[in-house]
Length: 435
Image 1 (spheres, one colour):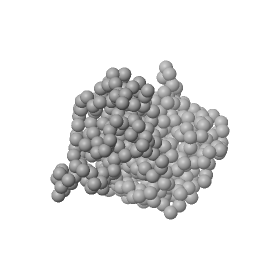
Image 2: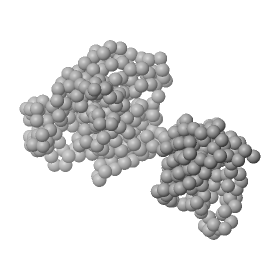
Image 3: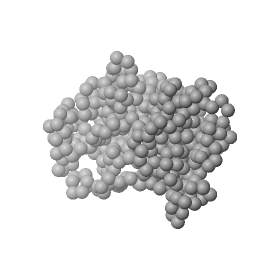
Image 4: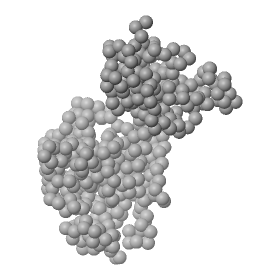
């Protein structure tokens, strides 16, 4: 397996934000193995760290932006593409303003600075995410499809279609770990049609830019500029996609087909891939040793057959959250009378299952206090789908507020990836029966 990489020396890139025009210095600094890519707003009273992950994306038109609290950083995709193109896993990018320097609208300025910083290996194996099953997302007539690759690399085919505009239709195929990113992708610049450029500047964005500063395409081609590639526009779309895929938090390996995709659809694909990875990790936990087997569950809960609803706890994070399993079989006694021709697990028992897991979670904080969690009230109860014999009910509980006399827990129950039920459950803490 390949090893993780960072940079050896600090380097700086000075410029102005593409949309804001604000002056900014980006300082690239080495990061420890496993740290990932993090943007740091050092212009704040206290530096704010914003990891380059999909959960931190905030919706902005025509770019990828990240947020942590009130601190934002904009137009990160070209920087992320350069980092991915050079195979860098861990790096801090300190910024003196809210937008990354635009350079010439490509990834080339970032690549040049990072090469000056010297890319070095770290003594830790790289963790990649390999697409294991096809994933497709769409927005109107735009689509993105990801599916497994025979080799551990990222292959992209992008089909650009600007209709009857001067850009027209372009198709480009690129293999990130086989072809030359620095030569074939990094120089491709952000492009905009002349009428779009005028509309953006009329709206106060990019007012510092002249036509020669970016690739503006008029009726007869580039204005005050020339193409770096005959198909520069589609190559830049590939660049954007590579940068946005870094929001996965690890290198993505697979085959990607894109048609008319933009940042919002790129983000949606990453979210779907994160869900796929989460399902794989959860499935792996299901077959691993449980945190609490049935004997451990019985030591915590006072319930017994037929009212003991939690078969095992597969994950527990302190007193914050827990995940458990209830295997639903046709041998459950309630199926004899609850819709026997079309057996459905009673909703109250789904709630009871979630409440029991919530009681286990609460007990983590109140252990050795001699208290037992008794259900007090239910709020925002919703049933989303029926649960049938043969289903495996995956229970999730997250503590909201736990005190010595009461507790509130947010619970969900899933069948596969489908939400079956949810509720906010309040408990009253009472003294346990010493017998």
